[in-house]
Image 1 (cartoon, rainbow, N blue to C red):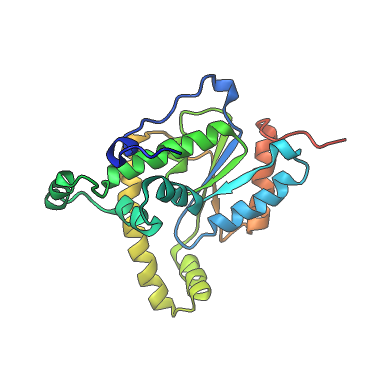
Image 2 (image 1 turned 180 degrees about the vertical axis):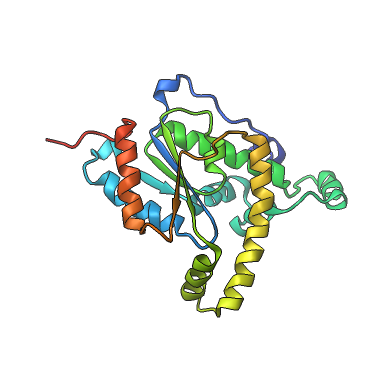
Length: 231
């Protein structure tokens, strides 16, 4: 596709669906650090596609969103993710503005990610992991937002096991990640104000991922978001 200037590309506004009834279905999954959002998405992908027709197969989107933006903007996905989380820095942003091919600001990156997410939700049969997906789609119908949480000690043990760390190292890592995410959470909360913020919230220390996947799939069925099984 033809590449427009990076600043103009990042400022594109989220597209408005031509008709609300044509949106979705879609699912967004948010999670605290240490909870397995992508693993839940993969389980749901298997459950939802079990009876889906070829044209209604569900797809999962996580790092793919950043990879798509990296391709569009000719930036490394790692740089996009770093800038998305960065707080505004007046001096740095001033000199960025003077550059013809400047690195976009966190605001511009988040705006473009929102545009991509809304497009995926409108297209339908999308499982969107993180990236502010629940906020970006808060005003769109025919979707379901899920949040995974757990007590801190439980998450510390999961991180330590997964990454081969001591529990003290895992706690430090978790606190650093949560500080980053807290900044983004406040931004998204101001931009996409909705109460309650999520349709379903699960404690991962109480329910297994398999149990959560079955419950979410059933909730989607109750909402009419799942294709009836083939006979």
